[in-house]
Image (cartoon, rainbow, N blue to C red):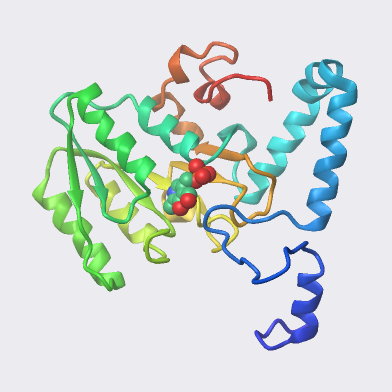
Length: 269
Ligand SMILES: Cc1ncc(COP(=O)(O)O)c(C=O)c1O
């Protein structure tokens, strides 16, 4: 079926999948996207089941088995190895764990953020100044931006601040809706040995991407914006060959240090 904007039959079928309040329809997925009727029905069914079966199911079947299958499906969403992803409660938790536990910073190093980053990411990067003794460099892009202007801003910053070691980069920014030229920026960063932590909160489900092609080793996502999963779900990605550069989260010990899941807090799943 053609999916043109004016194909009423197609959009009617989509609309039927969602419950709506009377009045204006809120299409905003920026905060979170609503669940479809089918997802909501499954969700309620599972909540009810977990309530009946309690720890017997969660400890034995979920933690030992179903969890692994979910992780495999999750990795399939972004076409990576299941061993490289770990569930979090949201993108913020994923990104903050990566920033907090990145262990290659020395006092005097520099870290980079731009005006397009999300506030919790900016906050975490600024926190590194107090805890790691690094200098936080904040650049402002030219707006409206172009591919060239965005890439130039980073080239200039990399040349001006030679002690840069780490930067945050937002794939699709919530501030202007801009899709960043991630591959070009990550390539320039790599040439300067600067690591990139990618904020994929608005990318997953909105744009097609492949992390290996983008040249990204560290990233955080959520599933409750454009994927339409229940609140509160997210995950982090660490390229297997870079796992040792992110410490276990706050001395986490339930998984071996060779397991990416040690980079998140262990709790009732
Ligand atoms: C660009 C960006 N990054 C990160 C986040 C945080 O996502 P979460 O609510 O999953 O922590 C948001 C949420 O609006 C966002 O827009």
